[in-house]
Length: 204
Ligand SMILES: Cc1cc2nc3c(=O)[nH]c(=O)nc-3n(C[C@H](O)[C@H](O)[C@H](O)COP(=O)(O)O)c2cc1C
Image (cartoon, rainbow, N blue to C red; front, side):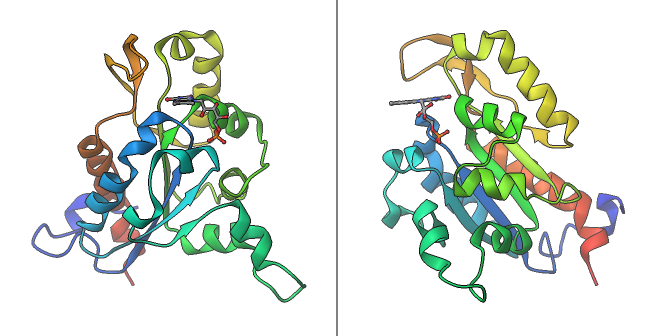
């Protein structure tokens, strides 16, 4: 892998079109999905698509997401016979980088143990670990402090996935403390940093 010095600051961040797949789960932080997508689209050369859990759909309006948005129904409606695409595999092939934001406690537990019972967890289970996967935990403070959280985060990091740590604030539920998803600016900066690390080796 080449250093970021091989990516001139004056040029677009990535000369090649880079494809970011955003996974969104049923945390209240999914309210920020429209802002997150819009900030990612500000990065030159970036193509974005979203894969959502059913619970996450409660927190945003599809009309506020100006990129392809895939949910469980798409996976099953797309496949009727052998020649049809298998969506979770096609999305894995399509994406250069996966960003799961927010990653709620439920999907964290599933990913840590390899469960894949919806489109998002199937993409993650099928993920090629040579490609970057970033995740942004978001949950209630007491859920965060439960010992199983650290165990599961440790498992994801052992897979090579990159944590964008949660922050402390007054949560929507009224509790105060760690568990809030990282700020959108922090998340976008980390995506840029990881793309910089990879862009040298990705240019042809
Ligand atoms: C209003 C509301 C807010 C929620 N926020 C969170 C959250 O921030 N973090 C979390 O881990 N779970 C949260 N949950 C619980 C998840 O939505 C629940 O565990 C769900 O089953 C997650 O499904 P998914 O992982 O398939 O998206 C919230 C539930 C509700 C009703």
